[in-house]
Structure formats: C-alpha cells, structure tokens
Length: 358
Ligand code: UD1
Ligand code: UDP
Image (cartoon, rainbow, N blue to C red):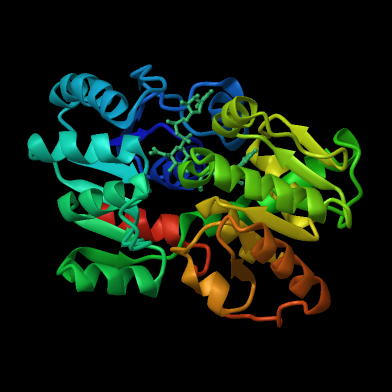
C-alpha cells in the first residue's frame, strides 16, 4: 500500500513523527513524504525532522510564505503532478493548515482517498483560516481520525459521522514517546538561564492576534504585567516577530525573547513552567498533558476538555482577563484529574491499523 503524507507546518511534523514511525513497522506500507515548504526556517522545520526522526521528504514543494490564495495555489499546482506520478492508495493529511487544505483539494479532485488526522475540530468561528481548512478537509476525507469524543460529535452534526474514527490524539502519543528522552538529553533551563518551575512560558502566533494591533498590544500589556510577578520565556514565532516590529511593540526586561526552539526543548519548557500563556492549539493540549495551568488568549478553544476540566482559562486578547486568569490560577490550582480525554497514547497505532484494513 502506498501512502502520500502531506505536511508543511511545525505542528504537522510533530504529529507525523509518531504516525510515520508506526508506518515504518509495516513492510507492506510505502510512505512517501511530501513537504509543502509552508514552514522553511531551519528552526521551524529541519529541527523537527532531525530530533523526531521524521522520514526525509521525497518532495519539497518549496512553497514559502504568501497570502492564503497564493500559498494554497502554489501548493496545488505542484502537488497535482506529484500525486499523478505517485498514484498513492491514500493521501494522509494533518490538522488545519493551508498545507492540509491543499492536500485535501488536490487528492479529492484526483479521486484519491484521503485520511485526515485530528479531524472534527471546530471553533465555530469561520473568521479563523484554520476553521475553513478543517471543514473542507473533513468533508473531502474518507476517514476522519478524531482525537476526542467532541470531535466525533462535531462530525455527526455535519452528517459526517460515518467517516469518523475515534483514535485519540497523536500529540499525546508524541508527548509520551519523547518526554523521558528529552529530560535525559536537554537542559533548556541552563541554556536560557531560567529557573525550573519559576517562570511562565508564552507562545503567540495566531493570525487573529498578530494581525490586529489592538490584540497584540493587549497581549504585550498583560505579559508585561505578569512579568512583574515572574519571568516570562517566549520563543517567538516568525509571524509575531514581524508584527511586533511593525507595530513598534516591546516587552519589558523580565520577558525573555528567544528564537523558536525544537520540540524536545519545548516540551521540557512546558512541563516545568508554572504557567503557560498561549494561542496555539498544540500548546494548549501539551499544557494539559503535563498538567500545567494554561491561559488561552483566544475567544474560544477547540480543545474544550482542557477548559471544562479546569486547566485552561479562555480569555481572548484582553489584558484585564489575561491578568485576572493569571491571578486566579495563582490562588487556586486546578483540581487533579486522571481523566484522559485525549486517549491512551496509542492513537498512531490505531490509525495505522484502520488504514491497513481498508
Ligand atoms: C500556520 C498555520 C496555523 C498554525 C501555524 C503553526 C495556516 C493558515 N496557518 O500559521 O494554523 O498554527 O502555522 O505554527 O496554515 N515565516 C517565516 N519562516 C517560516 C515560516 C513562516 O519567517 O519558516 C513567517 C513569514 O513571514 C510568514 C508568516 O511567518 O508570512 C506566517 O507563516 P504561515 O505559514 O503563512 O502561517 P503561520 O502563522 O505560521
Ligand atoms: N513548538 C516547538 N517549539 C516552539 C513552539 C512550539 O517545538 O518554539 C511545538 C509545540 O510543542 C507543539 C507544536 O510546536 O508540539 C505546536 O505548534 P504551533 O503552536 O506552531 O501550532 P498550532 O498547534 O497552534 O497549530
């Protein structure tokens, strides 16, 4: 069986790491990796292939950055030739980026069955580019692998129930697979001169925040306030770097800005943070995996379980709400929970089992 996996953005390299490792155990499966080139800085791409041993891509579309239409269009043009040549039995796509959308559109027009990992997620906010990408990808996929029961319900609401397979979350698999190894090999605390369990970790890159000066200004204001209580470490996404410069915004001295880090350093920084502030999907989940209180600077979350179980507060980009959530978490730690909404760490093996049975 031949599978063409289409990936291109940072979180997709993380997700593919565990699924591709599972494919490699099956001699009957020939996986061909296609990298769209949506992310291309070494710190946003190469480092993940090296650290997580994602198999090297056979094709790199070298798409680069651009507006949604341009970026997706460039991908489609090159993908079509490759899929026509490779003639895979399945195309595998992940998540909700423009690389996911291009993979779904291209494969479906060529009548190649699609399997979508992390399907069924909904924010119910169509202003998010990711929401459009998810809806299209789910509706064009033969198999929609879901991380959560919520995702399965979302599919049912759109009459896609029959395509859903509840397997758990591949990022949870990844966190279990690499956490111990990271602890043994890496020491980001010495490297970034930060005290274990004595800092807040920040990530921020979501277009709805970066592309609006008011939102990014509110976030910077809140983070500066929080940094009066404890140091804040911030691996800066290139998108946000650009907008911080454009708006002339700056953080105060107790906020340490660093380049994006690799996954193995990142999970250590997450695990040993006192708090996480983020607008990332993956980082919200990882905060929950490591039971670190998380403040999500968005208006809604797709990972609703993290919030209902008390480990995630949804504040939007509102400096007052962000600092209030921080104060609240400082006084009241979330209640311990052994509930496992993201599965048992075997999502990737379940995915491969389902695909090989088709
Ligand atoms: C994309 C995804 C988003 C995901 C994120 C993960 C879409 C619509 N969005 O957002 O869902 O959460 O990836 O990180 O697909 N840039 C660089 N170097 C790089 C990559 C990007 O400098 O290697 C800069 C460019 O200025 C580019 C900007 O970042 O214009 C945005 O990159 P892009 O891939 O378009 O979107 P992300 O914000 O990364
Ligand atoms: N990540 C990383 N280094 C960083 C920031 C994030 O390795 O500097 C990892 C993070 O641990 C998670 C994934 O990247 O596994 C999430 O990607 P991102 O936040 O870019 O995208 P999203 O999940 O929001 O789509």
